[in-house]
Image 1 (cartoon, rainbow, N blue to C red):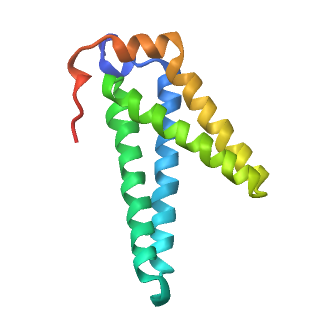
Image 2: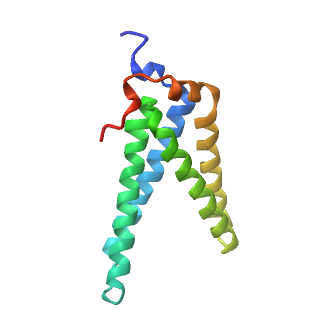
Length: 137
C-alpha cells in the first residue's frame, strides 16, 4: 500500500472536521424526514419547504464532508466555514431563546470544526492543489 495515497495525505484534523460535518448533515436529513412525516394540512407549504430545505442542506453537507474535506479538496473549505459560521449564529439565537444546552453543543461543534479546518496541516492539505480542486458531484 503506497504511503502517498490521497487518504494518507489528508491530515487527522481534516478527517475529524469531515466526520463532524457529515454527522451535522445526517442530523439535518433526519430532521427533514421528521418534518416531512409530520406535515399538517394547515401548514402544508411551510412544512414542505422546511423539509426540502433540511434534506437538501443535509445532503449537501454530507457531500462536502466526503467528497470535499475527506479528500482534502480545496473547494470544500468555503462551504464548511460558511456552514459553521451560520451554526454559531443559530447557537446564539437558541441561547437567547432558552435552549442553552443545545446552543452550547452547536457552538462547541462549530468551533471544533473551524479549529480543525484552520489548523496548519489542514490548510496546507487544502491549498496544496492537485486533482481534488474541482467538486465532483
